Amino acid sequence: MFLVGAGGGCSYNSGLGTPGGGGGGYTKTYKKDTAGYRDGNAITVTPGQTIEIIVGAGVRGANGGYSQFMSSLYRAEGGHLSQWNGDGNGGSGGVGVGRSTHSVGGSDGTGSGGTSGQGHTTRDFGESNGKRNAAGGASSYNKSGGETSQPGTSDYTEGSGEGSNESSSLASGWSAGLGGGGYGGGAGGNASGKSTKGGDGTVLIRGKRYKKI
Image (cartoon, rainbow, N blue to C red; front, side, top):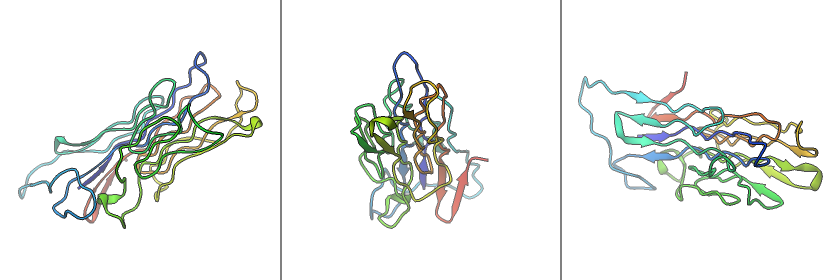
C-alpha cells in the first residue's frame, strides 16, 4: 500500500509580500517487503471486507487534503500551504522565502529555501526503481532582478500543483512560479493576488491505482 497526500496550496497576502511554493504531499508506505523504505508492515484485510479509501484533494489557498486507507492509522497528510501564510513543508518542500537567486523546489523528500521535506524517498512503495511523487512548488520570483525559481522534479505529470509563469500584476518585474510534479505536487507561488491549489494525491495498491475523480 502506498499513499500520497495532496500538495499544499498558495495564498497571496499583500501585507507579507510575494509567496513561496507549496509543499508536496507526504507519502506513506505499508508493505511486507523490507527492501527500500516503509512506514509499517503490510495491512491485513479479510475477504468481503468493506474498506473506505480517501484520495486527498488539492485546495486553493490551503493545506492539501490527506489520503487514507481504511482508517486514520494508514494516512498520508497533505503538503503545507506556501511560506508567508504557512511553512511550505511537505513530502518535498516548496521553494521557501529563504531561497537563493536560482532556486529549485524539493524533490524526493528534500526541502528548499528554508522549507523541509519528509526526509525519505517519495518514490512509489519506497523503492529505488519507483517513480517520484510530490515535488515542491516554485516560489514567485524577481525575474527582472535576475532571479529564477523552478519546481521540484517528479516522474508524474498527473496530480501536479497549479502554477504559471505569468508576470505579476501587483509587483513590477515579478513572476509567478510553476507547481511541482505529481502526484501531490505543491502549488506554485503567485504574485498577482491569486490563490493556487496543490495537486491531488493518490492511493496505490500493487497493480491498482486510486485517484481523485
